[in-house]
Length: 521
Image 1: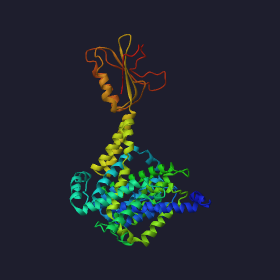
Image 2: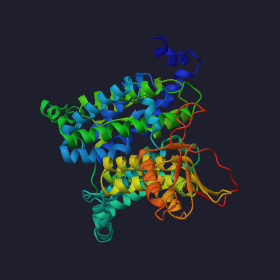
Image 3: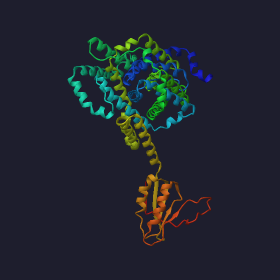
Image 4: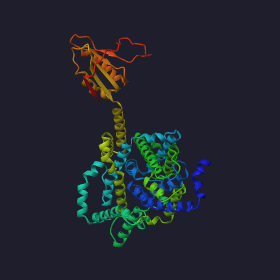
């Protein structure tokens, strides 16, 4: 119990309470437009984004794991939620999020949190890049007041027509101008003097766009307000019964993988920003699971730890979890006291915020250096991102994970083939390293170029690993290589027991002269 309250001991220090409350206001101002924007982009009522933000503060904020990390609805899950709502309906969303939370709690209790850190960084970056691309493509349509196509390919193919509509249609041009203006404010805001940057950029951009639309009486669509109570729709028994279908379980696994990986990678990044207590990954995974379970019961959006809000919390000087808890309280007060304020926000402005957020998900600055230093990692990143755009989130991430495993297997299966000619005319071929089926084509290329009229010995005594496929292929090559009547290829393998033992069929160490040829694979 003492470890639970230990992060709050700093509140006894002078000024810490005041600093945490000020930091909570900053996080609230950053979270408010993002909660609403993510909900609208996900195809659910705007209030559900606030519900998830409230749970992230008032529930996850109290739980151990990461002291300064802030949770809520994230742009990284927008595409997956949108696909789930369109395929299964809004009623199923709560059931999917509920099962996702239960699975996260189970994984945390089984101490699997650390294993999410083993996911290839290239896969995670590719996942975020793919999400960013799909988010940008979809929100460009919303920013112009048009209905976005269903698939990523259709969104790309429809861009020329969208541009034509913006040019020729006054309503589309007006909405697009509001969205572009919002993006311009987001880009230019960090370059303003520090006094102006006290107001977070997303809040400033949305506020200025809302004021411009109201002042100029522009005819653009605004956020639809249903009320907090009406928006909350807990899943019914029928929704819970449908959780057994393969398609739903695939979506649950995708939610779990992406939400957990994003939260724990965010925790690692936040830990580098401050010198306070480090994240306990298993406890953080449990905390995220509890939060998603509550969100599922309320029929709200899934949550993850969000790096934008978390970094704002740290930079605002937060010292204890009180700041993230208080930010949830501010969101609750806003949702209860000022719900009608959401109805004056232009959809195009929120779309502009999410287009900007999608651009920040694409690691543009890291791609070129990565391609130069680690070409294989760049291929995994690009393939994951493209697969997400072309297919869907789950299939794209699975493809990325498979490619990462194949690349790792390829990188670790280094083998060297040395060919030496001895004084008596015999040829000795020595394999060192890890001989696996992945390297068989290159190994056989060297072996099949060996002369067929010379005695040959194949030395496998120093190879670190020889898999079954490789050994079987080498045996077959040894049997059929000398087809001209010379003596058969002799294979030298590692003794099965102590240093003095000799396995049947092995030969002694011959005299050697310097190698004539060497091949590295």
